[in-house]
Amino acid sequence: MALDVPRFRRGNGQSSSTEDPPAQTTQDPSFALPESGGTLARPEPVTGAPQRPEPEEPSTVGIGPYRLALRRLRRNKTAIFFAGLFVLIVVVCLLAPVYSKDIAKIAPNSTNVTGTVNGHNVVSTSGVPIGPQFGAHYFFGADEEGRDLAVRLLYGGRTSLLIGGVATVIILLFGTLVGLLAGYFRGIIDAILRPIMELIWSFPPVILGVAVGTALALGGIGPIKGNSVFIPALIIGVIYIPYLGKPIRGETLRLREMDFVDAARVQGMSPRRIMFSEILPNTMSTIIVFAPIMLANAILLEAYLSFLGAGVQPPNASWGTLISDGINYLDTTPTFALIPGAMLVLTVLSINVFGDGVRDALDPRAQVKIQT
Image (cartoon, rainbow, N blue to C red; front, side, top):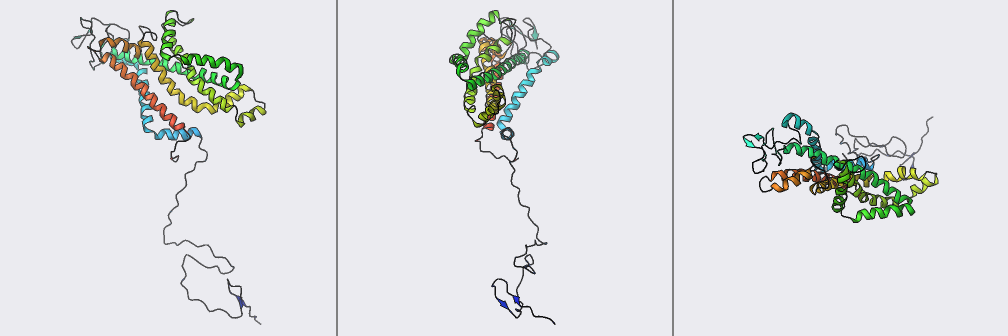
């Protein structure tokens, strides 16, 4: 015997003993009511319509500050261009021995006062050197002693870049060390190091460099002779140590009061380990920004000192000495001084523009997109 079970309407909570007549409705094929229960079934996609994929959100998880800075730097086309220009200048100067031996076929210090090139005297009877020939020999002309200016230009670039590089290494090493020691220990160590930096800082770099360079050019320093290129590199490095040491000292004074440094002290870390494993990594952005600035200033100061006779000593060539030699021939052979000056300007300009790009890339407040 079959029993009539009353059916309940969904949604109004009232019962009825009779079945409701089926409603005549038009149902969307993509939407179906459930056969039982009180919840709606999940809509199924229409097979005939193509589904457009949703765009993925750019993920920033796991991007470190230096990787993010590299992305910013790669978008700075101006900085990348001038960085490539500086690399090109460095590579060309490093190939100076190849050019001297295989193309110009003359050493950088070989004189040729009585020689001729293309039917012209290398040095005229009145002592005026020949101008640019734009050939294998004397491409940029000659100097007053008949030496190939193009060869000496490349060798002079090697000297200027070497002095600037060595001086920059000295600045970064000792400037960072002095700043860390003075800022972390404070007290008597800061009382000794800070006045020394202030004393060096108080003198203009050119005046101090000329005074010290002239004195050391006569007798040298211990085993280093006075005509060595390491004398001006050492002088420039010492002069610019406070220019990095003072900012590092200020950063260290701020960082030593941070909570992570206090936690390291509580864990029993030694001061040396705290300085080099906790504080130093947090000052790397400052060091990286100052590195190209110090390199450009070191190359420029070397040119100043060599121009005034307190830097690179003859017969060695540098861009400063070439400008000094050619300044007397601006009326007759202006390229003698203008070409080394242009090389110096391009080198310093490329380093400074690239340094500005590095500073902007490391700025955490820079508003740039991080997706690739």
